[in-house]
Length: 202
Length: 416
Image 1 (cartoon, each protein chain N blue to C red):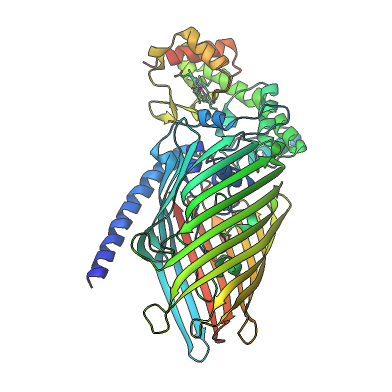
Image 2 (cartoon, rainbow over the protein chains, first blue to last red; image 1 turned 135 degrees about the horizontal axis):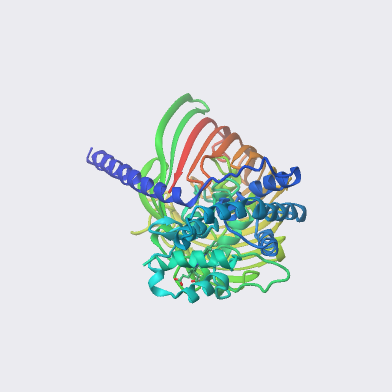
């Protein structure tokens, strides 16, 4: 009798704790995986195929948002896809790797560039405002957060107090080798805007 | 490999959380591991890096330096649980049949696993709160290890309590599968109910080698354990059982996702038989198992054909007459897993175990089949559902009575 009262109590306590923990864990999980799709209807058939291969292969391990937001040169994308090909269980063959690179290179000039142009156009000539939008369109927030928004594993809050504009530029374009921060290929104009925005984070 | 002790393994979502990757990076469907998941364990819970021909190979130290910041959410999963509905019909020869059904919290475990910041030490522990529907706190795993070398050629040493060896072999040698029950050969404890993997405290060493792009992975490991309270459940207090065990395991994975494993287990057990009764005696026996397991993946992550064979030869003593003898087993299974799309699979397995007690009358068989469907509902593997049906029937190798169990099971796992 005593035994069952105790075990019922334990079960009830366990379930309560379980619900509390799952809810908080679920909240965290929600911020980590983003379903991202883009409209490729206007892309040539070959590139649309490349998009399908990209979406299928790359989403096996991570969400697509960072690749769809980050900007890289075609050479840098090729290197990145080769790096992924050499991960265990990625099973991307050379033909598929080629299709993925072609898609990413095309998408770079046909969608990401336009997004950036409109960010510049909407900024009312304020580098800080343009920089905030560019921070999103270059995919910085897939690894960094500002005021809790984005990936909270590397927050950039207060960075404006810690680094000068010159230091920030160097950190973004040529991070120390072995660092998990990728070297970003960003045109000077955009770089200046992003840095102007980062300098406002005080 | 964790042959010979049936344990339910679970997906441990802290790892996916740590890297912001999906469960499919390391599992076909949780908890079944793929090559990357195997390497992850072999590298001391660090994500295996890209292995390119033209690039220098990263050292384990580099992987440690690149790790994300250590946080509790990165290193612990508190609520890995299984809720299930089970309907069973049991038939016992000469006694008719009875049916049962129940909805229950099947299991609820917490896992702590990760690395000690800025070092090549790693740790893993499992705390079980609910097991088999019973609130029964237990700590089946609690060990610490050191990993050295490079991502391509690494070695490790572990000490502590370890129910599963580090990475449990290639796909067909893993105790857990898409189906709720593991193959009979893994659960075969022998007619005197030895649990071979008894309260195992000991040491393990292993070596792992991977070729460029992980086209081939070779892993060998050896574990020596001593179970002082070796009846499988007690941690504290006196016990009348002891087990000393040696396990050796060799695995070869070849991309994509196929592999073979060889294992041998040698154990020396002692326990008091018929404790307290007039015919009490001390039973010392040697237990041996040798097995080979393999799987072949057709099309990348499409159809997986799995099979295994395990031979056992144990000393055996009749509990009633104390007459010495041998208990010889030969068991095998064949399984087909069909992945309809990512995160959804159908599976079927047939199992057979032939048991022969030398002073028994003739060998008897245990047979089992199971079919099931499994689906992961979220990319992070936090919710996995499964339905399965199965049939088991066996003739006891000593008493020669038959029994059969028909099971239907629906379960849902919450992994947080």
